[in-house]
Amino acid sequence: MHQSSQPEEQVSSPSENDDEKDVCEEEAPLSPMQRFRRYGLRVTDLSDQLWCEQRLAWSLARGKEETPEMKQGKARHQELHEEITEVVRVRPDSRADLWMLHFFNAWSALVQLERDGICREIPVFGQVGPFWILGIIDQMVRADEGHLVLSDTKTRKRASMPTMAQKRTTQMQMMVYHHLWTQLAQGVDASAIFTSIGLPLDAEASPAFLEQLQSHHIPTPQPLAMLKLALEAFAHAPALSPEMQISYEWQQDQSLIGVDAFSFNATWFQRKVAEARPFWEGERQPLGVLPNEGWKCRFCDFASECSVRPH
Image 1 (spheres, rainbow, N blue to C red):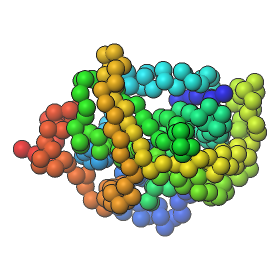
Image 2: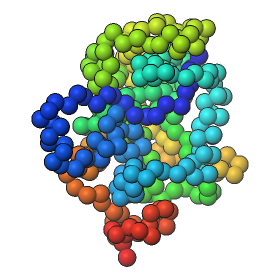
Image 3: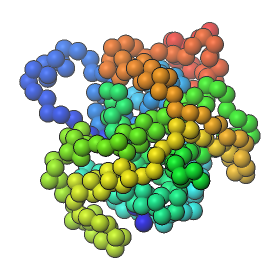
């Protein structure tokens, strides 16, 4: 059984600052990472950055309004999830509860994958370059050949395939998922993960949270033990194919528009992660879109006040 909640995709705990670091932070402006993502990046942060870094910067500072299209896309993902999984709503009361939930969801999804050959909404987490990231994979399927294929479903307002620039942002998102899954499958030390997320090894889930899970066959009440079970499941999963695919559906009737099939490109992926780092660490100002991509500005709520918009 898969548990569900609506947690923020922000992870890890800020480290304790010593006096020297406090002085340094008073003298220098905080980086975007320090201001907005002290608990780690979301997978969509990197894909949004690929679309337009300046738009991402404003969204971080002012918040991103959820459009009707985004709401419909979320509803479609939930519908697909509930086709194969009974979803139970629970409410974490602490960070230990929240991570217990992530670990349990990952483990239970992998159990379902082994049993049924398919699972959806799988939490993955780990390092991508200098960043700690948490994300939720849409779907993993065991192919006839026995390997795993990572896939996603995106809804479209128009009954046409996206542009290459739009495809690239989703491909980036998928490659982050692929990287995180591969990392977990190759083996990660559980204590190192707890260090990254700022939880003590003896962290306990709250009694109220465990009571919510009592009738749902949770294999252990301990977050660290739950993580170890999830890591064992990742390690024993079939090999992950480098091939991925994104299905695009028309929002009006959920008909299939087309499928974007592509492979993990390590060179391109590592280059984009490296290009993303200076913005997050405050080493440069956010960049706008390229001169030949000014058409993106038509979709931006901040276009009217953007000083780096191509003319």
